[in-house]
Amino acid sequence: MRLLPKLLAATLLAASSLAFAHAPADDSLYIGLGAKEGIRKIVATFVPLVLADARIKESFSETDIKNLTLRLEQQFCVLAGGPCEYKGSKMTEVHDGLNVTNAQFNALTEDLQIAMERNGVPSRIQNKLVALLAPMQRGIVTK
Image 1 (tube, helix red, strand yellow):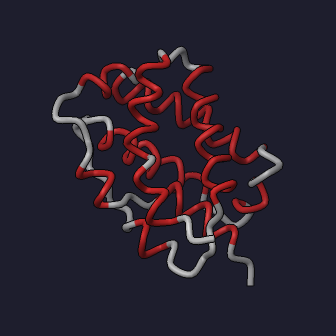
Image 2: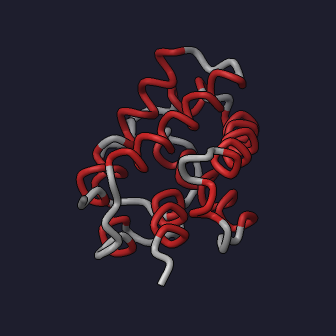
């Protein structure tokens, strides 16, 4: 049974209640990311990076990329304080028993930072988004 497709797709698709509890009280991060259009561009850069990343690309061979893209846009928008709704599952639920490693989680984070750099997102804004995603690591990394 191949667990990695579920593992990494779930990492990207699911939102934890912990992360949303730490979403900003204002929309400055959302604006800093370029609002909906900027987030769409970041995700449009991010997904191909993940799919080309030799460390994790096999994990997405059975993933619905269109759905993945939509959920990422929703997740980043909500985390950034934007006017969006996320309809995914909690990370702790979808990662239960998948033995996610820190290396896998970190590979995704690195690809996200590259995507943000390629879209001209300032480092301080990148750091804010990554800081909101970081608490998810505790709930999904189990190996």
